[in-house]
Image (cartoon, rainbow, N blue to C red; front, top):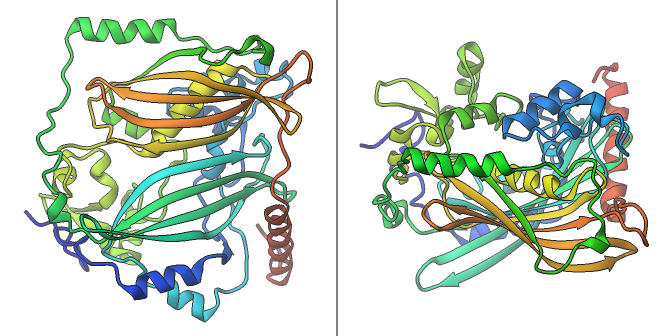
Length: 429
């Protein structure tokens, strides 16, 4: 059954082919950064926001959730999980997009199949209650690959930079997006034989045993000198995945604006603005295209055997695994997540990790670690590679590095221009 929206038939939505014009336009955009004028559900961090966000993916670390506890740590109060930096955004005023940039962006890779392949994070300071977060971003690189099987593919790295009210860079996130000219029809059915997971009482008891054994390192420092290559990082349970898990993630700021879940008049307004992003269900009711994450019927209509999670959700899990292991005095400096398989509704993920290196990096005592998320099918669904700064008896406390000088300068420049434009407009945030 073809699901049709006002402007697009989703049974054919990814059958277009990549052209030389697409590639030329994508390359033209490399190096252009612009202010993000969109307001997310959160524009200023608070203790309540931070706690609710952490709990939305199952992280009850008191450093994020308990102000009294957090006040006794080196941070002096609650700090946000690192991944929250990209879910907070206050509108950043900026100059109008140049006409040639607007032309290059318009309809770029429309109807072309897109895969979010990996995400790389770098952190430079924590988000604290009261921080107002702004963002700018753009295309960082474009690579073209050609093969007999896949035809032409384009690998795009998009960079997002989050900074606070003082112009200090908080986080840099890079997304690797792969655009492929292969038709949806060629891939449809590849995974359709996968059956939903089912669990006996014994299976659930084994999962619960992992949950029961999980521990947050917390106030007990994990010193660099006590870490060795090939050390196990323990294990963590996530799932079995339910629609409730997806709802929890959306409930506290994961908005996917402008086409994420919305209701009533808000949904109506978004539907008028982006009609192709709201497709009728089997009852003839328009709903967001993102419902493949909780609606099995729509997931099957777009080529999946059942609904599946967001890759971002698993990135949060990997970050939680790292911070549970390293403790309050450590800092996750970098994390790269590579998605390998879908995590379907009903799937269980066991998270494990191992230390792969231990070294001094620019005066910091760090450990490089590899984290694996493995489903009940025995398939690795995501791999994470991270660098963690650890407290050291010899080298002192863990600390953040300075951000790249060019990006730090851009953040200051964007913030200064924001204040200029705000003053011209008569003030207001």
